[in-house]
Image (tube, rainbow over all chains, first blue to last red; front, top):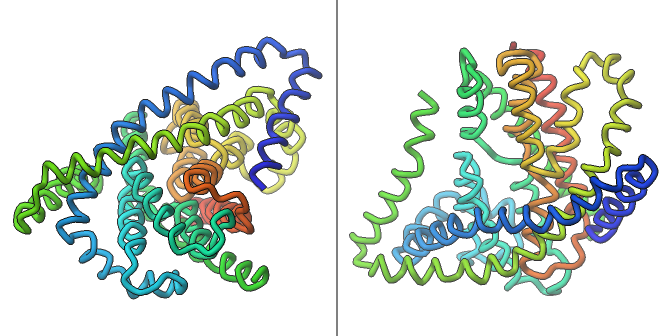
Length: 192
Length: 173
């Protein structure tokens, strides 16, 4: 699927550029993308190193476990395939909490750790398991309660009430998360 | 109020983790360094996924195909009374986080954060996430080749979020 989309982006993009005589932009972009991806990695790397370190303290001290027990009634319903007490629950729980507070940068390393531990119990290592897809839907629907970035941007542009959109954000997120999970269940049953 | 809470989240979280570690007599510094070391592996597996995705997405975006599509769709948008300026945001949100953030900035600058379109853009940005980014990064990092129905579930959640945002902003403001 990703293969097809990636191919579609490149083929359509290049052909459209050729038709509209924007070859300069194209050449520039092909060179630029290497730089911008390196910039991105350089930005993410130290943040990830920091949060993985902090998370390891929480893991070794048992805090992470305690915390995932709190969320476990809900998580067990969402992820029936994960065996009880498996460590992926605690990574999933910390990813969800980081997302709730709008800490996208902290959520990514937790999410990657969660995927890694879900891969351990995955039967076919090249095919996505049902739990992985459910976890992915939770992430793409963006379970944000406090959209930190947006509030600060609104402040920057002189909004009279920067936080007025929070309730609407929470409701829209709720709607998309519940809907996304229902669709996920439906497709999981249909495709087996 | 809310912004004070959100600025306190990170410091309090770090304080909680470190304090709990001290109470449980963990060698916190050693454990921190151990955990942090893992980031090297993660970054190395992430980089090819990121590079590939930025390459594909940027060629597509800079080619101007989308501007062309927006022009075609303009009549439909004026029919359902949704400002056309929001459309790039709707399309870009699942594809690229940094571009949709740039569009959000443009909308705030051009229309103001308290305008209808400013509020709508805020709610769309706040209630959805970058599906393609998460998909390629999360699956790429563990070597999953067949993603099955993941894209459809993820995009469905995005579309629901956008529809909900349009309704809610119309209703609440």
